[in-house]
Amino acid sequence: VLSLAIVREPAIIFEMKNLLYSKDLTREEIEALMERAKGYLPVAGRGASGGARTKVRDAEGKILATLFYEPSTRTRFSFESAMKRLGGDVISNSHMDYTSSAKKGETLYDTGRVISQMADVIAMRHPEKGSVAELALGAVVPVVNAGDGPGDHPTQGLLDLFTIQQELGRLDNFTIAMVGDLKNGRVPHAECELLRKLHEGKDDAGGVRFVFVAPAALAMPREILAALEAAGHEIVETEDLDAVIGEVDVIADTRIQKERFESEEDYLKYKGVYVITPDVMAQAKEDAILLHPLPRVDEIEVAVDEDPRAKYFQQVENGVAMRMAILAELLGL
Ligand code: NCD
Image (tube, rainbow, N blue to C red):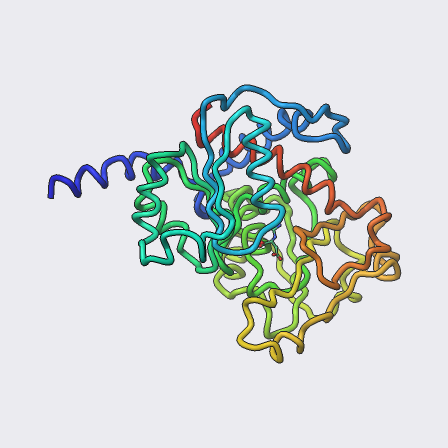
């Protein structure tokens, strides 16, 4: 009993300091993270901010552990470059699924507890929904969800909101179309939850309208829609991108999530269902922006990259600044 109490106590203290789910953030926290990310943009970026790409010393002496049980290019590197630009260090395993003690049967709880003895903050990705929260129960340092299966991806959602703010100059009174695999895509899930939390309690829900563009079988989960509706957001669901693209301010495109389908055959039914080409973009508003978390497969043609409304590479840079802000907050810096 005594040893259990010792195990649980620090975990409870740090519970509030994890970033596990988008819906756990308050409006004040979302706004504070945006402000802080803006401050870090000249350190993290070169692009629009004309920054120096340098580093600060805010996290000197601190170590980030990145534990990835599922493929990633950007998200892991983004966390790692964020930590390094904060002046901290990184220990990393990108193949936790087959080179870690998970192979020997270690529980996520124990892994969290053990890594906490060596690192000051943990960023983790895993194919199962809820898995990051499980590791966080054992951890006694802050844990960040870097994607838990089809569940949530709060840091990507935050960097997407940050990009909207940077590019549109506002986070209210706009219409966003989410396009693609809205059932399995954790990124659109995170974006919905964060936009809802950001405008919670306002009479007009911040004037943020949602247009969900997906095949019926890949529609946004009902519980996310119900929460948006209850919060007063206007919602439209359609399968027809052409019918709505001319009316939206933000096009948040995503990949059909191949790895979440039962079979290749099932996936092939939806592969290529929406492809954004220069002709499609010709129908979009002149001041709209096109977002994509990447990787893309075939849903945005390379010819679209030169369109000034395409912001997916700028998003990557903004992501480093946002993750610097997140890590700094979680480390209490
Ligand atoms: C996304 C992810 O992993 O959920 N990628 C990312 O984090 N940049 C989107 C995706 O894989 O489709």
